[in-house]
Image (tube, rainbow, N blue to C red; front, side, top):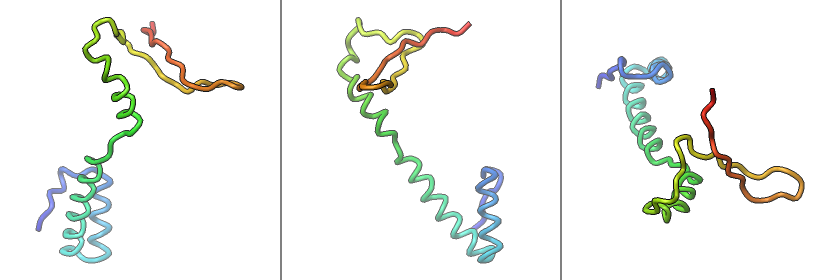
Length: 96
């Protein structure tokens, strides 16, 4: 089972070479291909839960033409200071 090393990142190539040195060429390539398949599957499943919640909260405004986010959007942060709670939304502007 030959692995195309030209499509690998530098980190993946290092991992493949380390596996080849530690357990041998054939077994190292087999283990690496299984690890790479698992890694791709895990990275595809990861989603940002906070981004999903924000998108879900704004979903009601999808058809509302009066709700505009502007060209540069907004930045949402937690409020800071003594006794302050909640969030602060600040409109982003073009930097000159």
